[in-house]
Amino acid sequence: MKYFGYVLITHGSRPRGSLQGCSAAKRQIENLKLFWERHNLQVGPYVFDYARKIEGLSALPNLKHALDVVNGKNGRLIIDDCRRIFAHCSKNLRVGLFKEMAEYGEHFADLRTGRQLANLSNVDRAILLNAMSPISFQLEPSSQKQRPLEERQRQTRKAAAVSRIIRTKNANAKARELADLKESLRKDDRSVSAKIVAEKANEQGITTTRGGEWSANSVRRALKRIEGATK
Image 1 (cartoon, helix red, strand yellow):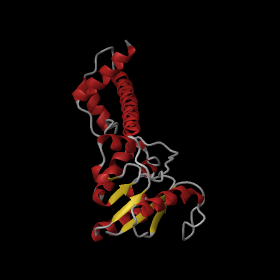
Image 2: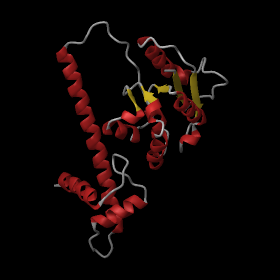
Image 3: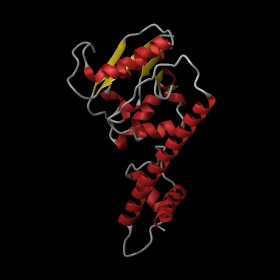
Image 4: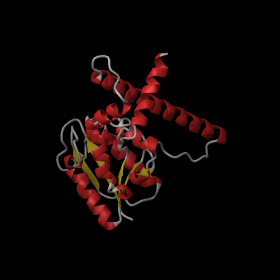
């Protein structure tokens, strides 16, 4: 299988021809090189785009072309951290961008999760859809010694705790957004049904934490979260 590296430049000067001397690409290239060395892979060519604002896959023409190439040749395109792409995309456009990229999910992977896009967990997908700039990620060199079981378990518990915090934070933010929407729809002190709130939220492009559409039941659960927090 042929591997290619992808680098996204979102700040600084636009590279001319190559990435040599580009400070904005330095960390990404170091991460990719470490990956090549760790897995004893032949270093493939680096593909890069320069984009300060991303509204869809069309804003990243070199990424789109590279994905078409690896898709046709059963290759794989590697980015160090896929959050770099979504952090510079407007939140209301991120679900659409994810769907575009998901068509190449078997051939696009990132080093942060160690997974192909097609195999991301719901938590990883939520992290992508809520990514915020600046993105900082450094691939750590592999240790020659196996970490003790107790340390590995501690790291697993820590990662799970961070994941719960992120999910809770995102869920609370969505609930507040729905509560504000419900209040704006209220007229003459009459109640607004969860079904109406769900319909309006979907019309306005307000997605769930997983990027999906709202239903009356999911709206009720979200609003109940806010009610419980204010008691």
